[in-house]
Amino acid sequence: MDTTIAAPRTKPAGPPVSWAWLGTLPFFLFVFAFLLLPSLTIMAGAFRNPNGNFTLDNIAGLFQPLILESYRTSIELSVVTAVVGASLGALLAYAITWGGLSGRIRSGVITFSSVAANFGGIPLAFAFITLLGRTGALPVFLRNVFGIDLYAAGFSIYTVQGLILAYLYFQFPLMLLIMVPAFDGLKREWLEAATNLGGTPFDFWRYVGLPILLPSFLGATVLLFGNAFGAYATAEALTGSKVDVVTRVISRQIRGDVLYNPGLSYALAFGMVVILAISIALYVGLQRVTARWLR
Amino acid sequence: MTGGRSLAARLFAWAIFIVCAAYLIVPLATQFDYSLRARRGEIGFTAYTNVLSIPEPDKVLQVQASPLKITLNLPRFYSSLLFSCLMAVLTIIVSTAIVVPTAYWVHLRVPRLKPVIEFFTVLPFAIPGIVLTFGLLRTYSGPPFSLTNTELGTVALLVGGYTIAVLPYTYRSVDIGLRAIDIRTLTEAARSLGAGWPAIILQVILPNLRVAVLSAALLTFAIAIGEYTLANFLFPDERAFGSYMASVGNNKIFEPAALTIISFVLVWILVLLIQRVGRGTGQTQMTGMR
Image (cartoon, rainbow over all chains, first blue to last red; front, top):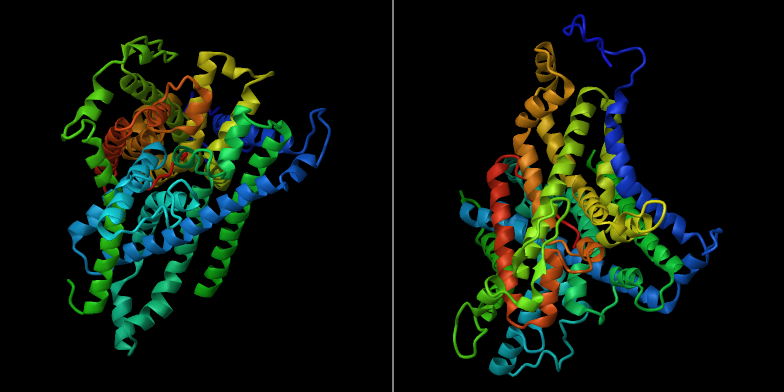
């Protein structure tokens, strides 16, 4: 590609016609084969009937009660665990950075959180069943010691509440990992400056700290939303068929278990991508707005 | 160090820490306790030995992991773990082969393509594991590309899917690594010594990126090893470690508890390795396909 035979040291800075982009071709081919083509297949399938003609029937099929309910469940689950997880994670990040806890606690929390943030899926479900199942450690303890019967009071681990509790196990540690660098980025001199100007610590957080942290906080919350929205293994292992989140409805369609409808399964998958795309667009929009505030 | 901070603020910090620590530790502690009670009336490691050592003759599954064609008779714990490790290693090789030359080339020669490449590397965030699985199956399980008909094709799909799933992490890690070294000078020096492009990438760039590549590799390993969604749909014979854990959960009582502790320890070891390797660059947040 280059004229390396005569003088390798005089490499032209920019050849007149650049074919350099060809070097990225393997990457694009790979992404096309394993990401874009599957996505396009889903998109095309969502708008096509079995004869291959354009149709909106598949999308319309999403609006039947059971499927709407599964989307509602997934969104509720994701919003709750994202908001609670983000708040708890941010508070913990505050506690280990600005809260005056020792350096040993800080590194312990970070390491444990790195493990917990990756500890989704099957084993996580096992642990929560042992802890909170009908004959689990906590319900038995509460019944024997305090006479409180969680399951009689309407609680069950095999419900959306159970999924919320289990998802939080990886949600708030992930938030912590994202927020610690953000809290570290706040300079202590700023607090001193605020104090010297007569402000209270509350004023500092209200007018300096939180506005600076807001973009990372919102961005991370959207990430947590997507993290919960796409989760499948944990829901499958914890609640089985008792709770219908969208990912489980899609999995049933892939297996062809019940009422298999190929067009509808494309639409279901397409719907998930659309919701995630909206959440990402929302995030980009929020970043713009907060960037304007911060200027 | 703590001077000037009010007592209330410190109490608040401690309260938050205790609540969060309890949330993280209690489920594991009860699970560990439970895993030790497989024999009525005594505390012991029976559940662990059941998982780790006793081969169940009817449940023994052969590891047939092409393309290497290993055939071994092992308890399913080992066979499935071995299979998932092999898939993780293949994913590491493929994603390094894709990401390192691309990121290098973009930095060196086509910086204006950078935003485009970055866009595609974060795109997997919008495609959940189950959707990627569905898309891959629908695209490659029938003509014109029937990859799922062959063992090799199915492995290729799994590795391809994993590579896509970890792309946001691997690319970022390598991208940050490249920013820290002077690739222009290194390239010029290598070329003036007569090195070709493969030699430059393998012998000059890769060694300089070893921290970035190694931490990306460990991240990939941690994500791939317990992955359930894609592995379970591509290999319905429950060959992967995630599928094995799920089937133990359906059939056994105490063994799932032992498996929880074992897999927690595995992830812990990987996280410690990542922290050790990537000291300073420390990127340990990762979310695989849950």
